[in-house]
Length: 463
Image: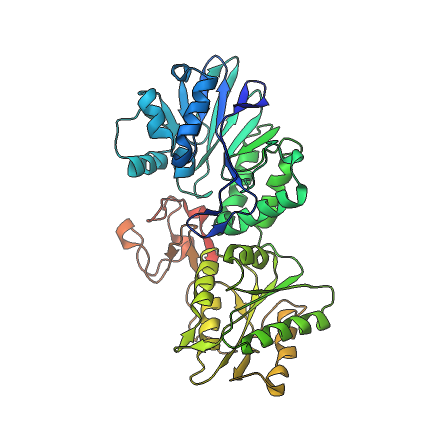
């Protein structure tokens, strides 16, 4: 069954009520999801994306019940990930030779996943257009790393719809299809959780891309993402939210995250939460045991927080595996402007706090010096260290205490690409003509990331 989006545009996707996990087990689905595909029927007929391979039979059966497949003139692939392209091989067996419009990286992605099948690819770039009749055009906008290198958005003139792919989406099944029909609390929570877990690593690009779309002077009356509800009433509200979330977002919240063996670290976690409330009654405090809560749900709270406290007992000269995994995931999200504190119990060697401190620093957090390091079980002396730790976390000036020692010869700042590549001036990029010792300002303007090809302006300065 198709659902009308606007005029000659229909939703023809798959409502996935049973989905429980996404991206392996990294993202938990609480309220279903959808794989949104769209059908545009003007003088030319365009299919915008498909659905995940496990649902291809339902998708194709539904599509064939609504339209003669041979009437499809063009297929637009905004992103090659399997949840959007999985039905493409089966579809093209039925309508071989149908032109596919996508980015150059999408060609790599599709051929990498499905093999080189001789599909009729038409590579597009930002600003390229495709006439579909009745005075309407599709305008393509590359959206590299939002959230894959192959991503793009497509704008339909006349109806003024931006098909935004993964940007501005949510993992949320809304049978009524439109955001204004959805439960608003769930909608915005899922939209923010989606950003925090999937889009956040590319925040610098979000800001640039929002400005780039605005510079095209395209009136946007509707935003149709690839997952979740379609934004039709005040659609720019979600764009404004993305701009805010991408700017080192934080609320007046502190989140305490821990795992425990014999409840000692747990006692410290709850005592820290109590002390935060005592010193800052208006600050929201949340406490999570990583062994009892999905990591992506905790991440959603960390994203909102101005500071976190992370605790683990020392075990086998390290920290608990659940905390280690959580911190690995946290690092990948590249949050900025947040503080952290560490705490934990130990029986013998006691390296836990040191490891927590190193990993949080590596994840981009400003780790305060006060900590709680308890031998065996916390006692009065250990609890007495908590007020100083909390005071640093909620400090009005927002600056954590640091050791005064500085290097005699400061090194040149490094710059990081959204893909993770770091330009180190000391090393340069000799393979592409940038000598060791070349400061960022002296790197040629046309130099691009040697890993993913993003331009110099996509990089962000790191400490």
